[in-house]
Structures are given as structure tokens and as C-alpha cells.
Image (cartoon, rainbow, N blue to C red; front, side, top):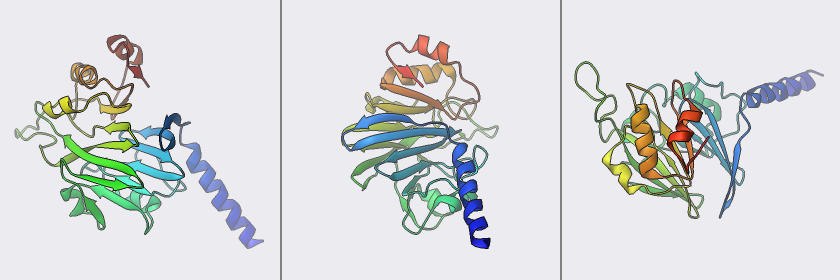
Length: 234
């Protein structure tokens, strides 16, 4: 009887945790159906062929207890709302691969380091680390909120279906090389990332088929959709 109660508790705990997740968006890729969930803030869950890819899991938007085990975790940079060791411990197993920056690797064991421009492959998904940094927005001491070279954005190439996860960044010159991804996640919140104007300009420049604003304080979907004709805003 005791074991039945334990099993029931674990089942209910898992159900409660998963109930926090919104229904995923579904996309056909050459390698199978991709499920995309914006958990909140900069936290994402991408699911492909039974494998779970997390980006920046963060406890302020969800308790990750009971969420599916991570096959891969991408961490964009070392700030507390992107590198949350407590939540990582709930989804990481000995088989999980964690990819991040040199700075994150000094704080977290077992990280495969990708610097800006670096590339690797995981389960036939090509992963490229791209720059993510501030030019305009700076701290009172004059240092940018996100210095060049510290943080990563990521481009996932799933058999030709490309997902761009920008990380904490402003509109930067390197975005000119990111052309027409199938999905793009772009941040929109001052003073840390992009203004509304920068966000719109970045989207127009990149021209993704599907655009997810993320890492935002507030968003007016109707206004963005009007400003970005031809781009589907989620």
C-alpha cells in the first residue's frame, strides 16, 4: 500500500509539473515533427523524436520538477535568469549534454564549450553558436549589460529547418548573416536587450517565417503583426 501511495504521489507530481506547460506549437521538419514550447522568459523546450532540448531553464517561470529529462541543454550565458543550477539539477541526467559559453563552464561542470562562431552536432542536429551582445544599452559604469563575446545565441539546423535562438542581444551587425530562419526567438526588453524599434528592425532584417518574441516584459502582438507583414508572430 505504501508503494501505491508513493507511485500515486509521483504521478500527481509529474502531472502537476507538466500542467504548467502550455500546449506546444508543432512544425514539420525533415527529421520529424518539432514541438516548440515557450515556457516563459528565455526558457524554451524543443522536442524532436522523443528527445528534449531545453534552453535557459529558469525557476522563476516554472518548477521543472517532473518535466521531461533533458537530452540537451543550451545555456546562452552566465546571468542568473539563464544559468539556474537548481532547476538544471531537476532535468539533467548523466546522459544529458550541456552546451554553453566559456564563462558558464567555469561555474558548471561537464559543459561542452562553444565560443561565438563555434559549431557542433548532436543527434544529427547541427548547432552553431552566434554572437549575442549589447552595443547601446549599458550599466551606470559604462559597461554593456552583455559584453561582446560573453554570450551565445544558437542556430539549430534540423535537416535544413533552422531555428534561431538569439539570446540576450541587441540588433547587432552579425544578424545580417542570419537569413530567413524558419523560426526565430528574439528578445524585447529594455534596458537589457532590444527596444521595440530594434526588435522590429531585427525581424525585418532576418525575415523568419515564424517569430516568437521572448524575454519580454510586455508585448503587443497586434502591433507587431501589423509592423511585420509577412511574418507570423506567435
